[in-house]
Length: 258
Image (cartoon, rainbow, N blue to C red; front, side, top):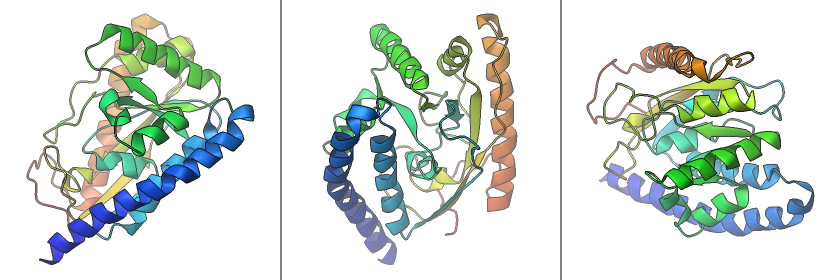
């Protein structure tokens, strides 16, 4: 009964925070758009809406580690993808990055409007024209000195094992000359497992890892860059899993004790 009430509260406060945050983001967007072509301020305000919802969720104990010396140096940020909760967790990092997201997310009232104002990037899965346009938009954001956030698996994994990484993020990094910034995530799988929208008790950590330079790389190096990044994230998430008490390879839906 207590867990059911906590779940209802988590959904209620999340919806309310999103609704109340929409006009705030809209005002910031309206006032800053003329001199903020990268929509840094509006985007950061939108991420803080997610952070506020996270802080009010009594079921989740999330934290991030790591910082950037220069928040306006553009990176192609990549992370493993365990659940929808990853978005809340990664938004806690104190700098702005534009998210590559499937088009259905942009259709959600309030949240989708804020994503557009924030300058996030829409992708229609399976549509080559959309994929090409998304890459152009990613390059535009990087040129405006704002990082881009991409889940290279493309979707959430149903098991402990990461899905194969797609080439897009690594091609983008090499072509634009931006470094790859890996993030290892652990613990969110039990916060909102794939196939359910129910909030569950969980502890999770997102760890910023050392950036990987793409200087001197060509498109022939995509595979090498992709594997290096994957290995770095895999090692990082195993360390985090051990700290959280998550058994490596455990694909049960049981929640981590909060």
